[in-house]
Image 1 (spheres, rainbow, N blue to C red):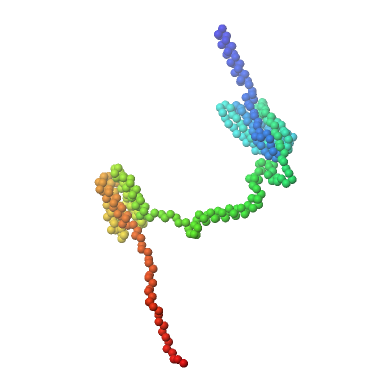
Image 2 (tube, rainbow, N blue to C red):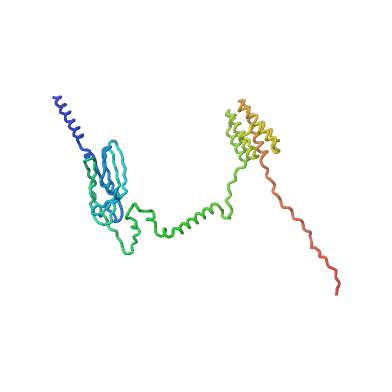
Length: 346
């Protein structure tokens, strides 16, 4: 008895499988049509959206679109409604099902109620029809004094331009508007560049080499590198500060020089040769740390920092005294006597 039930179950399963296999492809395809708006103002356009849900890889087409691509316009409903180009396509895959979406512009210039024909989707020798749609085209309320420029260029959406939405007064006086915008732009530029008193806005002065060096030395001291056992990093940064200071303050390209070349340049400079001993102590200690891997004593680290500060302080620019106007010569007090000319009386 159990064997018979199993036999009937297998036969039933095979029948279902054969029915599914023998089912035409069109039975597994769904075509749906929908309008963005069922009420359309005469002369306006709306979109007709078509979606096709079908097994992945199915090859099908709408014969109507082939004709639309050739002619650009297809009249329907007795030439009262028109399908227009361009038609937009989009495909989304979800497992074994793919959804093909299309957008068709629809336009009408005759008011009335229209029943749009079904769309036919052809797959091989089979075909699938969409649902039917209804469209109501409303007339445009126009009076004798109503401007119609809003409808001047709605006949063909493909030929529409951005200037169709620009007011007429802008198109007519565009040169005057452009001139006004240019004048405002120049005024803003002048306001930013000049102050009210007519002078240039002063730029923030760049820090002097002395200010840069002293700021960098204070920052180096706050890092406390040698206190953390980082003597090499300490002397590298200390010498770099002094090299930059020499270049910016005296034009000596110390960044590209060795210690011996730097000391030779200082000896040739009348303003720096008596400060050479500061630099010698710092460079000698830096070379010992970098190349001989000597760990200096705390006193040596402090002395190097103090010598760097002394070098910068003693070589900073000295402000020049302002020139005073020469004192005006004192005039003699009292009135100057006039000499009388000698002459005879009558």
